[in-house]
Image (cartoon, rainbow, N blue to C red; front, side):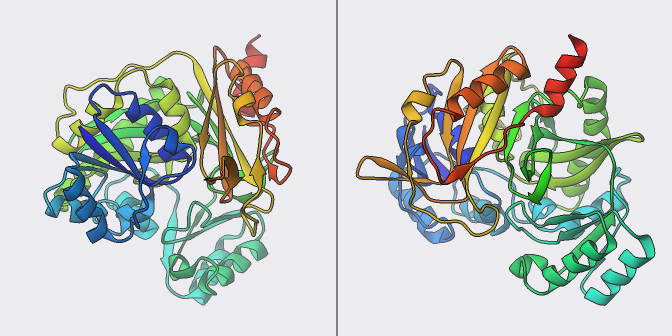
Length: 427
């Protein structure tokens, strides 16, 4: 098969690495890709916001299957346009993708289908949002309604912080994404990531993971697109996973099918495990980044047939096999992220880092120039490792991090801390 992968981040490098290993693949392209993806696929300088150009490339290259990585092309309807042109694609349509592109859409769907989630209201007026906040107090959560690259959420521990977040969002802090906001109750508990492949009617649960969204150790600092992850997430027990499937995933698929917008692709549920059981934090309409990286390391099966089964509506009798080992990834980001940061810094020591046992390095924001690897984004590298335990995977990942020479970069040093604490408590 000839496959085209859309995207340029660490998620796409992990997908490219996994797809390239499939014996079904004849040719793999990635648009636009990055310096790491270039080792797995032929990177092509396509503007993936130009749907006509993507379709023209598919025609010229006789592409059999397109895998859409990021959220923005899904929200822009790339899958709709590819399907209309006769090309099979992995990912939801624009209408089904509203689960991520519109938080108010998802909240309304949850309310109508009794899906457990935080109490909320949706606002297009700053004064009304502030009045709702004042009536409830803090802690409270303020979210931009649209896509904000994983940074559109403010968990406000004080009332003033929440009011300031409303002003920031309505003031254009997240562009069009913040033109409307959702304000919701703060949910106490432990958050983890649940993934299911969906074919419009059936869902196949994947491995679980836990992301670390805050920029700095101890879960401090601003929210980011994710500073690290590990899989599996012990907090998502088998019993809780069953609840998530029965109370969230299946009712959501039924609701979207009833609307005439069947969901095909991967559905990512951010789940808060509270004292009252699991509750939905939010949905994403694509693989998480950096959760995808650890899922791909743990997936034993060939991923390509699974992705095709989603597009073809053939998941009913499908199954996947997983390695028992834990996988953990540490994000190395440019200093200043998630705020302002520079680009073009030389990164050295990657080959030495990759020699650590169990380590795989996925590139996110990198580019190659005259044989050198340069930083080209906020989140730049995903230093991943497998191990028998979270503690072992964590030690291997940080041993690799310490071999990388990049003074302008930083990372959290505590990825996996909750699972490591659990392991210590058991020993």
